[in-house]
Length: 119
Image (tube, rainbow, N blue to C red; front, side, top):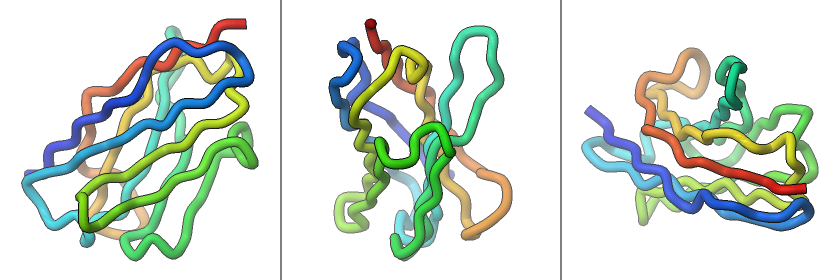
């Protein structure tokens, strides 16, 4: 069973930056594709970004392209989400997720970290 713990959330002004981290344990990190999702109050959980097991391919939601980046450090069992030029509409709880395959549903989820962007 893989455990995921997010950190790095907080309150930031519009235009600012945050870097989220997701530390994993209980599995072989390099064998999992990783993703970030977010959920704003009253909304469904939406895809934000993903990175393949090797780290060679990434994908992003259109709403964050050019502002967010995703990376992983397999030596530290950690995936990161760098968020730049934040907007109030980026306010949400951000969740880290892992899956054993490069495609398909995510199998494991963290508890989330709150990101609040003030205007």
